[in-house]
Image (cartoon, rainbow, N blue to C red):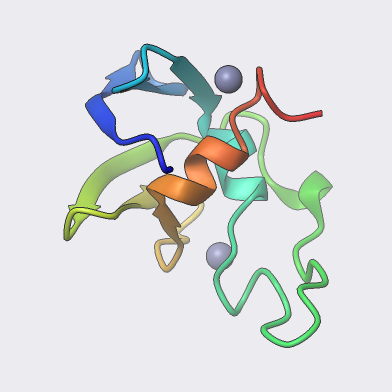
Length: 101
Ligand SMILES: [Zn+2]
Ligand SMILES: [Zn+2]
């Protein structure tokens, strides 16, 4: 079973919050989200190995836009120019900072 977001909102300039239909609330810093990007430029498609150096992501990274993709994902336009990452709800739940170990 996959949780579904009931509410998605930007919190100030640096955070994104999702309220899930099972009552869980996740808060993600945009820098953290950027570091978790799974697009082909950031992660090797075949091995899953990270191609992005997490330290290269600016500390003050913001997102200028968050767009819903169908009813299964969110795409972010980041202030470092990166905008090809699509974050499925399932992946977002998996990388929830308070759940992730
Ligand atoms: Zn990416
Ligand atoms: Zn959590």
